[in-house]
Image 1: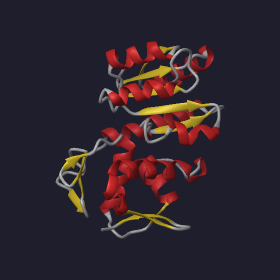
Image 2: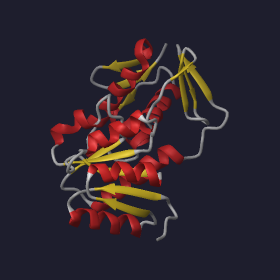
Image 3: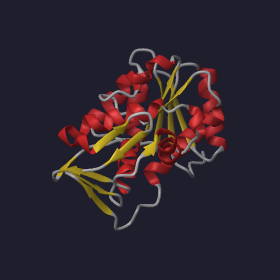
Length: 227
């Protein structure tokens, strides 16, 4: 199997959907491993160390959110893209305790999903901003190492959370619209919906503790980072 772009783990109990995702991801140069229930998916993630995981929410036995939670608890920050049948689950599946990187709502275009997987990998594997260590207030971002510290203490962020925070801190005081953030950080158009930006800002703030005040909401516009 060609794994030129790395192995993607797909955990989806509906076989036709799993087969479709396997075909489209493989066509784009990814290796693909498929499991059909949560426990098997968790075991495969730990054994195979994929570059990304595509997790359905409604899995037999152990649902996708629990798979993601257990990975994060063990220190595994492999990018996770959730599949959900209901848009009103977004806040839950990208909640502070889960650490999901993105989501897509069924029914979806397989090409759109492949595009989302590639976008999250660009955030994780893209060229580092070499030599750029930026500090705003108590927050220090080392772009090359993809490390975040608050008053010298490391803060664990998903790839998306890190990219979002780094983008805001790169230009302190600059106000970014949600559409700009979606395009620059997530890498896809605003017509996909900007709600995920707000959810991820909430995630980042939750992890920054008192330092969350650095990220300021500009009502009706977007977000900015300043001391």
